[in-house]
Length: 627
Image (cartoon, rainbow, N blue to C red; front, side, top):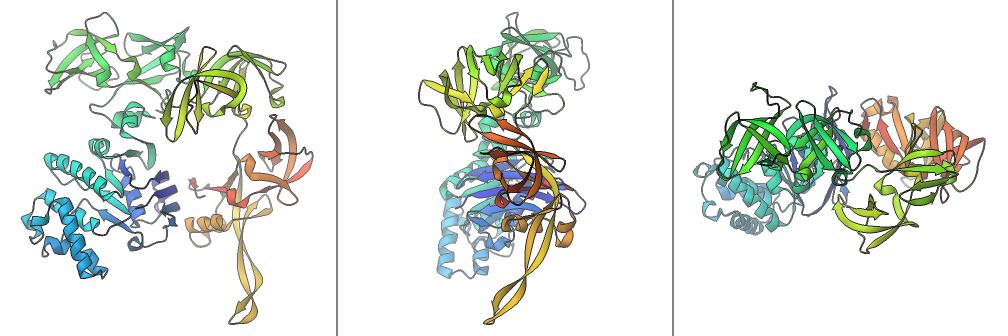
């Protein structure tokens, strides 16, 4: 049993094709994780890199506490089940299952015990002395599973193992694999292109497209809270309906207008206050997503109007195919086509006009260009109107004393407060309305003097009230049409990687002799900075031979990973940014602006020294993160 850690994993082929882009994930011990996506999305490549059958271009793969990038597959303590059963036709089932153990010279009695135990678990004890040709497809797949089980691996990898089975057998085997996972209590990583398999089997699902992770979440959350249009359309049957539209805030309501038809709906702003504020002007184009079950035909004169083209009666439900454009006679796909779902057998008149009620909580909104959700589960900002005068912010019916860093701001403003910028403090007492556990964090819903607010915390809040303040360096302000953005939390600069050799004394065959020892450095603006051993190793692994010394990189640090010292990068102090409890130097280093946490005041020329172990590295040529 083991957990897995995948950090900045890339697979780039010699022709420049990126099969997997910056894959990051931690898989807990005994988890059942499913990788799902269309053909060519990188899911099988990722699985093969975990197995050791495909070389990792760059990144770090850990199984348990061991980095396994350079380990042979047989040393990784994993077992893999392929789409093809690959059974030896001349061997009995017993011999097929035992073959791998025999190759490892496991004791005969131990082999016998493991084979019979696996056969009992899989329900194939009666077939142990038959040949594969005497078994059905489902039974052969059980044998392939048995061959993996007897290895007693830390991790089980399954690459589309049910693809060759018919629909009935696939449904049966899905259930059996889930039961097997619970019985074995080991980590399962399963690859499939079938979203039904993913939804019914995985404790967590990784949805991939074009080598990128589009979302990692539980089946329920993928369905209810898709982070982008691709996930929204990929998960769920029938596919989510998508329409072009705009959204506008009018007092306490949002007006959602379907631009390709004469339909619009009104939704209370409180239900959708997570919508990003820049989309509320009624001009910025968006995509509206609504699932079939959130559209219900109604006799009431409410909602939207559609014209029915045909229906599909499926027994427990009826699918209704319709068009929001009442004048459209074209059967081709259009932005006004819509699928509705009703219960049981229902009859609808062809070409009939029907009113449809929309479940307001089932509305999804996406940016037209990026296709990213503009109604995120964790909001980007809490947005409020206010005013600033003499370093005092009036908002939320409260006066907040601003730090000196913001003293230049004056006038009417809009303030954007990220949920993570809300800290424990004494500036405002809020009522706790509820909390939700999302991706390892608690999203706390607060009532701030009658205003809705979301805070993000590591721990849940048990009390009825929460006293808060803000991390002002994370806040954004719009004053008189000018945007004042948060202080950057990433400093970056271009450089190269160099090696130089130093002669050092060492004992060789009992005699003190000098030998050459390699030292690695980050070369930035004519300055050499020491590279940590781990950073140097990862960079050398990512690029073969001397190529690593002829490649441009971007080195990055947070303001907390830099210090003023006697040696380091040449810098000039531009300003001191005073946030009260924290102060930062604004520096010019070559052509870049850096921010460095400080406890002292400096001016003029200084030197900045990064902490070597905190360096993050991006290879600029292929745009891949190495460290």
